[in-house]
Length: 186
Image (cartoon, rainbow, N blue to C red; front, top):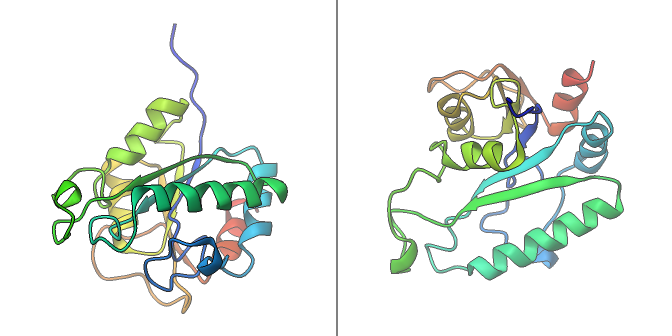
């Protein structure tokens, strides 16, 4: 018997959910991007599993630890849950080829644009990649979605400019998550 799968929304963290000020790892420094909490609440209300897929090279660079990532993730998801937003799971890549912490200094398939974390999330939560969507703020998010077989991939660009030149192209470009969600739920 075939396992039933669901369509999900995959989200990058820094630059989509929170303001990307560079290597955010403390709750005191974490700031939700404008309109994000109501937008996520709309997606939860629409029944989408929400899965965060984030590169956290600050671990490899020695700026913070994996435990710091886990602590911030727990604080963020707890805050969102209190607002009526359910985050199904968060996956992160601690690796980077230019790291300073030997354990994490390497090339890998889990760092976007690699597709490993998207595939892992789909497998562990019975999600249909082909029916799902990725929302990110960098070309690597779009590339990861395409490599994993995610159905649609959208780019958040505060300037709402034209799509980036590297291929593959996103399915749409929006000034913020709120505008993207309004488009998806129209």
